[in-house]
Figure 1: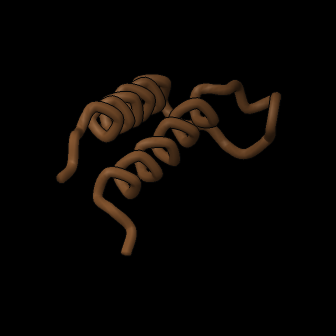
Figure 2: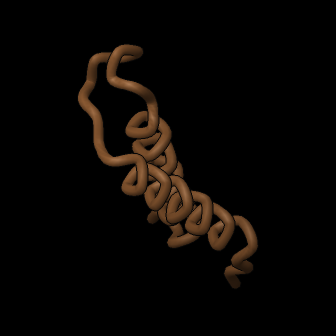
Length: 59
């Protein structure tokens, strides 16, 4: 079974990538846009999740 640490790291990385892609201008990838504040919040939450998963010591 997958550990909580690995799962949190995967989810954090996905949220981080979503934030980075959301912050890119529409003319680069043509995938749509979102407000920049929303992309920044996704990036911050993704980094926090990855940081917690990295520093968490499981038994």
